[in-house]
Length: 163
Image 1 (cartoon, one colour):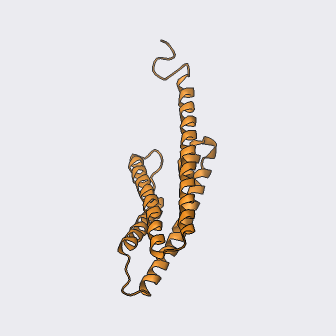
Image 2 (image 1 turned 180 degrees about the vertical axis):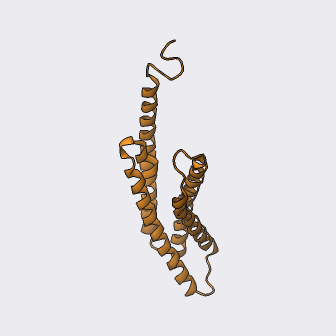
């Protein structure tokens, strides 16, 4: 959400990038802990297999690891391959987000805790979704205002301000 919504504000550059990187590295560390927990629980539970949850967890770990390493090969903003890097980075990021949310639901169903835990998780996800929708609307307003402000300049680069 930091990368999506805060970077819209020019005054937030480059702080948004460092906040985004910090959050992502922190999330990766938590994911590695989850990965380790899954390996430990799996080794202590012979004969009990939750294939879908495990396979999604493996996929998440691989995608997240690729995302972390991609930080080191990120092209500069004006490089000809930056567009393709952005497409990959956003695609992997959204895939991780969707798979992560889904896999937590799978894990909750495996553990079968009291309903309040699943409800609490759903409230958090719905709240974050609502905040995202609000921030999306604000971001579009800011971007459209910025574009309309730029388009009202007397000189547009083509006709030297003449009709």
